[in-house]
Image (cartoon, helix red, strand yellow):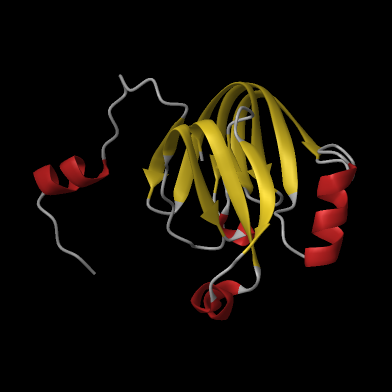
Length: 151
């Protein structure tokens, strides 16, 4: 257990309310999404919400037949839920630490099980790893997220 002075604790745990970002860490293990529209979230990750938000599980063919076949053949790919509406959405994933990344016309490859949420403007695809070290660390396939937005 860490011991903090009150000032250190507040500095360590406070959020800047003036930040316009839709994704903010409520704690190292809890993501707060200021929802004004739509976001993709990992199925089963919603812990609480406030506001008018609806949830719909991703359809089998929602991202096209090619993505459906890739998911079926590789076993990779996160099970996603579409959250739509206005409000605050709180997400967590079995005590995993959370990092928020903003992509600016960039791409990143990650394990599909480690994707908690991403903006609807982010495109994703299942990719095969080419290096043996990556295969040994996490399997043959990863998710490639690309575009501009938060993950």
